Length: 266
Ligand code: NAP
Image (cartoon, rainbow, N blue to C red; front, side, top):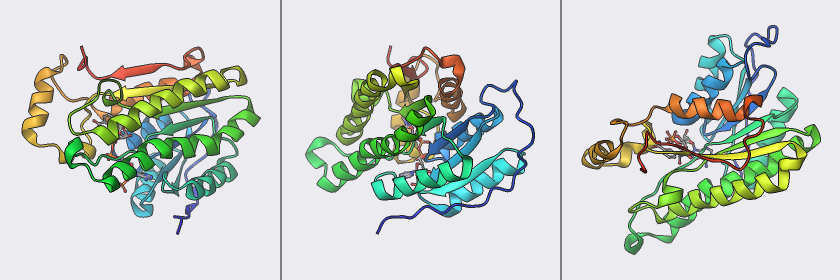
């Protein structure tokens, strides 16, 4: 059964559009927005004046995050979908369009890890990570592209990873998906650039979010030791780049793959 999205009524103040904020008047849809990097992106975009559509799998947690944003005077709506399910994504995107009237930026952020060395990887681990991290990005972008084409503008921002460029021990499935995201991003930049739609990828290094919970402390300590910045990144440091890419300030940034890793890959 597909997970049907649930549209919650937005009650926050709409107010006058503040033209001084760089995302004023724009609607930004963020997947995996209940927590972590997605939540930080939603918060940053809202602070920059956007109407934000938060999408996640768990209705309760995404509603809580959207409520917190609304309580601070932002315009935010909560939507549910499993990005690996094309029907669920299509219904969610239709609901966002019906509610906010347009979609100016899509942030493909939802992602999971299911790590194992190649010799131990099970088919279900391979298939689920590809379904969420690669097919999920395809389903969301495919569902949004007609809306952006009709508008004649749009920004597609996808969360890849430094692992998609350089690989990582124990992450065959994750590395394959994140490399695929880069390939799709460059393809969309070429196909859609003349239609006013930009596509870019962000490659975070190691960012302090719940996704790192499965990593042993000793591995994390070793990662930090190797990062020239001497620390893990913060979700807000990814959100800053996403908000820039969503804005018109990034009007000539298309097909870019931007590492935000504190220099971890040098
Ligand atoms: P996170 O804290 O685990 O948050 C991911 C969010 O995505 C969760 O709210 C999760 O919901 C949601 N989600 C998972 N599967 C979904 C699905 N099928 N449909 C809709 N939502 C789904 O992860 P994060 O660290 O913020 O990572 C965000 C993105 O950045 C991911 O694409 C990740 O691969 C990428 N990234 C992260 C790092 C890092 O170090 N943190 C580094 C490089 C790249 P549930 O809680 O219900 O599962």
